Structure formats: C-alpha cells, structure tokens
Image 1 (cartoon, helix red, strand yellow):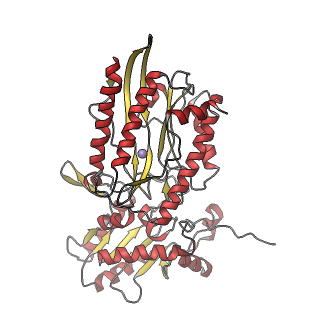
Image 2: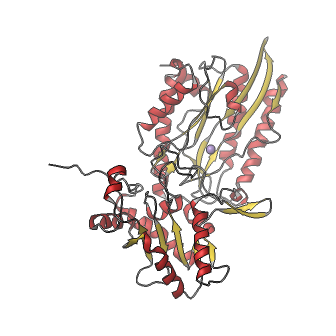
Image 3: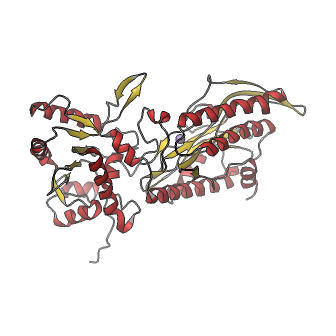
Length: 467
Ligand SMILES: [Mn+2]
C-alpha cells in the first residue's frame, strides 16, 4: 500500500525559514549562550492543548511555551532544553519523551527517543544533535552543574516591577519549573542565589523580529484582511453578532492552519463599550456601530486588528466625527513611532490627540459626552511577537526605548455616551470605537503591517455599499 508522507504533528513546521530553519534556531541559542555565559535549563509546556496557559486556547494548534518555540521550533509538550556554553562536546541537549506508540494511536505522531527515524527528524528540525530521554534530565543537570566553575543555573520565569515591587507570574509552568530547580539546588547544597532569571536577555533577543518573522506577520495580516473585507461586503446578510463572528472566523480559518490569535470580539452598539466583550450573541439594529477585534496566526506570528464600522454601511454625522477623532489619534501615533521613543510617550501623543479632538471637533459643535473612564481607557498598545501580547506581562517595557524590529499594536479608543444636535437632528448613543493596527518599529519610523485593511470612512462605506 502506498502511504502519503504527512507533516509530523509534533513539529511546528519550519517557521517559514525553509532550509535556514535549523541554522536560525541554532543562532538564537548561540546568541543566548553568549549573552548568559552560564548553564541554562528552559522548559516547554508540560501539558497539551487546553492547558492553563493564556495563549493556549483549546482549539489552538500551538500550545508551546513561546520561549521554547523561539529556541527550538518544537510544538510538543513535555520537553526541556539544556544549554551549557562551557561544554566543548555537547553544549545543547534536548530532552523529550520516549516513543510511545499507544499514545500516538490517540494523538498522532510525536518525537520520541528510542526511534531512529524520530531522532533524525527532531535533529533536522532543531539542529540539536544530542537528544535524550526526559527522565534523565535531573541526573544530567546535576552532573553538568557540578562541573561548572560558575555555580549557577539560568532559567526563565516572568518577572517585573509592579508598584515598586518585584513580582512574578506564579501560576504557569515556568514558575513550577523554577520551584523544582530550586528544590534540586537546595538538595545539591548549592548557594542560595544559584538560580538566575534569563528573562531580560531572552526578551532582548526574541522581541526584535527577523525577516522570516516579519514575512509571517505580513501573511497573518493578509489573511485577516481578506476575511474582514469579505465579511464587510456581505454584512447586510447578518442579523446578530454570532453570524458575523462565524462568517469572519470561517473566512480567516480557511486560510491558515495556525488558528486565531485569540477569540474574536464582535460587539454591536453599547456592547462595544465592554473592552473584552466576547459574549457575541446579540442582535443589532441599523443605527448602531460595530466593533470587531480579530486576527489570525501565521507560523508563530500574530495579527491583532480592531475595526469599527456602522451597521447600516453609512456613518451618521456624529459617528463620523467621533470615528475620525480616534483615527486622527491613531495616525499621529504612527507618525511618532520609531526606535528610541518609549511607548509611554506614544500614550501621551495618543490620548492628548483624542482629548484635543473631542474639544475641537465635538464640543465646539455643542456636543456633550460622558466617558466611561478617567484620563485614558487603556494603553495605546502592547508588544507583539511569539505571543499576541508579548514581552514582560507587567509591561515595564512601556518605559523603555523601543528597539528596531519590535512589533507593537497601535489601538486608540473612545468609549462613552455622546449627544449632539446637528442640522436639526438629535443624536444620542453609547458608543465604543477602537481602531487597531500593528506596527514594526524601525530606526527612522515604522512599517504599518495593517495598512491594507480598510479603515477610512470612505473605504468602509464603499466596501459596505457596493456588492
Ligand atoms: Mn491589541
């Protein structure tokens, strides 16, 4: 019987780098070893899809710890990477499960030791020659640790400053692994501070995207754009939020095996004033606006897009004024984004523009409003990359100068109750508007990866009224 060769389920393909993938992962590990100069152990996620990580939605085909993915390209649970820059013989060791045919009957093919073909494949994907059984990890780590001149082990956990105090994310696999290592180090009579956090150096290397990442991010934008345009063209067929969600996600998912970046927000009218609305089950009426926050992955990169448009296909005069205030703020942020600028400076630009716009373009016409927040509703953006929200989760990066290659979201918003009398007509609505693009920072400015996704009043009205 002739069998077709299918893609290995345990492999996250090649990151789009084709023949260069092996060298790409190896270069990243080399750079990390050069920066750290110490023994390091990094864990993958110990559990499969539907586990307790924030990016691991039950239906997501990607469930690996992003740091592990970045360094190896392996999308398989129960894996550990050991890096030992002091070793001349074997400075990279990958620990995986042993080959388990019974489990493969249930879950598909996985890498495993004890099978030559499998080892050949895992070496060719990762570029790591030394692959061992995960049950040997503790003994190998101890042996390597005892040989070190510098008696430390580096590992990754998420740590940052909040209200002047150093705090950690304590609920994920990285922190579980840290605690396990600390216990072992105690039993090996290691010095108290032997465990070091490699987070800073890791993010310095991981956050600036390379050309393959940027190509993958562009592909994610193209698919997201395609789904959005087809959905808008067909919008008059929909009556409720769930129809919009189903159609939009279907169009997008038909074009990527890597899944959605996150569950879509599809919010009509007043629902758009709930920032993370995901109920998506209300009917809408023709005078409302609709806010959708959506996007797909391609390889390990994400699109994170928000668009707001009128259900009828035509903005009413008040909606148009408010929408253009947000759009102008977004354009101003994009103009100011470049390496060396801090994201908090972009916050100042963004929310200053929104407030100025409200004064100049709305209040001056007699418009009245009540916002749902004091000052600003949320940040102007966040870092993106291997995760939809990447970088340190405490967002201490907001106060750091942006680096070339960083990908950020640019997402001004306006949420509240607005009233205006214009040309003898009264407008009174509770509205949520957000417009979100994704930018890659360069030395002199930025590239807007989302520039093709329609967002001007003219573009939106044209798409919705011509079919
Ligand atoms: Mn976002």
